[in-house]
Structures are given as C-alpha cells and as structure tokens.
Image 1 (tube, rainbow, N blue to C red):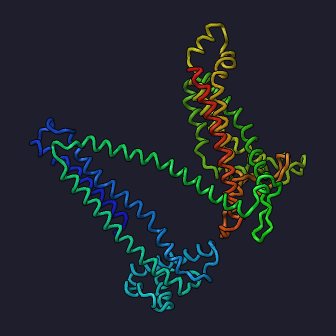
Image 2: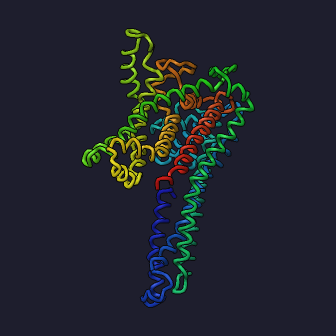
Image 3: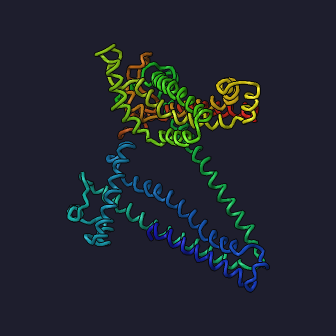
Length: 487
C-alpha cells in the first residue's frame, strides 16, 4: 500500500476510534457523563492515540531504516570494478535507483509485465529498447550487474512496503481494539491520555537534542578521521590553504579564519551602529504611527533570502565599489569581489537582527527608571545616554555577539561577494574567502570521502561550530548575569 493511503487509513481508523470510544463510554453509564471517571472526550482520545501513535512510530522508523538496509544489500552486489570508491559507488547506486524507477514506470504503463520486470535474465537490450519507447531514458550504458541490482532493489522495496503496511495496520487495529475493550466507566482515561501526551511532548523535545547530538558526533568522528590523515599542527597553524586532490595539499586554516573574522568585523561595523541607533529611535523617540510602520518595514530585511543578498553584492555593491576604488580612481580594488563588498552586504542583512533584539531589550528597561530620571531634571537624550543604554547594555552586548555568530556562519553572501582566494591581507578591497565557503567547495563534486581534501570540510565545520558555540555561550552568560539587576 502506498504511504499516502496507509496514513489516510490509519487516520480514518483513529477518527472512528475516537467516536466509538466516546460512544462506548457514554453507553456504559446510560448517557449520564457524571458517572464517568473522565470526560467523554478523554475516552475517545485514548482510542485515537492508541491507534495512531504505535502505528506512526513504527512506520516512521521503518521508512528511515528500510532504505539503509536495502542500499547496503544492493551495494554488496556491485562488482568491485564498478565501485572503486565511495564516490563511484554513489554514482552506481544512483543508476540502480534510476533503472528500478524506470522498470516501475514500464510496468505501470503496460510496456512490461510484472514477470518480465522481475526476471533478472531477461534480454537487457530488449528491456532497454522498450523502456525507451515509453520515454524512460536510461542515459549512459547500464551494465547487466546494474540491471540485476536494480531488480533486487525494486523487489526488496516492494516487499518492504508490503510488510510495512501489514505491520502498521496490525498495530493500528490492535491498538484500536485494545483501547476500545478497556473503555468503561471506571477506566481512568484522563490519566492515561495525559501521560501519553506527556510522553509525546518529551519525545518531541528529545528530537532536537538528539539531532544536535547526531550533528556533533558526525563532526567529531569525521574530524578525528581527518586528523589521522593530516597533521593537526599544520591544520591549525598553517598559513597556506592549497588543497590538491592529486596529493601534496596544504590545509592551513589560518587564512580562512582571518577572512571569516575580517568580513564579520566589517559586517558588525555596519550593522551595530545602524541597528542600535534605529532601535533607540523606534523605542524612545518615534511616534506610535511611525513605529508601527517602520519596525515591520525594517524587519522585512530579515526575511530576504541570503542568496538574494549575494546577488545584490555581486551585481550592485561590488561594481559600485570598484567604480569608486578601482584602477580608474585610487587603484585599491582589482575586482568586484572583495572583503568590503561581502562585509557591507552582510552588515545590511544583520541590521534587523541587531535592531529587533536591541529594541526588545530597551523596551524591557522599567519605565520607573525613565520617570526617576525625568523627575531629577534630566532631558530625554540624557536619560537615554545615562540611564536606558547602561541598563540595557548587557542585553545589547548579547545581541551583538549573537549577530556575530550569525555573520560567522554566513555562506551565500561570501560566495558571491567575497571571492574564493584564501589569503592573509589587511586590504579590505582584496578578494578573500571564509570557512563556510570552503566547506561548500570541498564537499562539491564526486570526490572520495576518504581523502583528507574532503574530510577537511568536517574539521572546518567543527572549528566553526566551536567558535560560534563559544560566542553564543558568552552572549547568554552576559545576558543572564546582568539581566536581574534592572528587574
């Protein structure tokens, strides 16, 4: 059964269970709900949850695990000559899945019978021709071993889907029947439902933690594998970044970190003053109509995709800066891609981030502090400078550090606006690159994941993760340590 119809079937059974559970509970007390332990809706919800939760849990787990098992089984059928490395194996497996999809399409359209599609000794040329007749293009020449692997892949997928449907329906039906039989006036439905909902909420909260743990562990394992192949001292203290898939790579991270911090520093130099001044104006000086119009308009910047900012840097800001600082004028800027280009555009992107957080922090300063300042004869500007900003300073510093974390992790603006050169230079009009841009470039293509040139991306990601984590922890520490002084 298709997953869509399987989900609809289980949902329909759950809706039916809710109605029957509620009805059965009311019948047990002759329609007088006062004699029930719980409200009638709890009895129906109990049947619905017993029908849905086990079935959906098994279905999700099955959908996650089945492809892994099938891929491992089919990969063992690929001859060694067809898959010399991880990259080649990935390409062959793509062919296997493509051929399996083509056979499915041929069966659905009637060009092949199920028996012909299932026979691994069928004439491959005839099958290829008949697939081509119905518009299923196989592209490159597919070997007989790939065809056999595709047949097994298709068979195991169909078998797995069938047994998943059987198991899910049995669980849904079993939960439905069990919960319905337990439904009577003395059954503590509310306690059971609330415990079940609490377990679901706990599971939902655990998913985020487990996802974070999985990300960290994947970074750690691959980083350790990289440092088995490449010296850790050369990575952290090397001044040259020159990867070469043919061997002899120099993978020093210092130029990438320098480019990352340089661009982030320029971005913060743009975003912090503008964002902070706009927050002070909107919270302390702007009339309500102006604030109601300007604040949402300013926050629209936060909703613009970063790739749009990257194109803005590439097509508008870069050429403009080159016309001002290029060879025809002062000769500082050789191309439109530079640290200044990426930093300015990234700063524009961060303005609503700094402004919104700072505005919320300034508004959180108690009105009594303003009134006390005015009562002592201070003007509004003096109150802002000497009372409000010092009171809000810890929160503002935390907002700036969070904005710095956001700047350090930015990718698309750097790819379009900063260039790809890994160099150590103080000239902001030269092209440089960052850690995130090199992570993208190192993982792009069909490189072998066992090589240090690919594994270095995980080491870069781990380095960036530690840096941003430290900034976030520092920001939270500052906010929590000083926040209560003004509450």
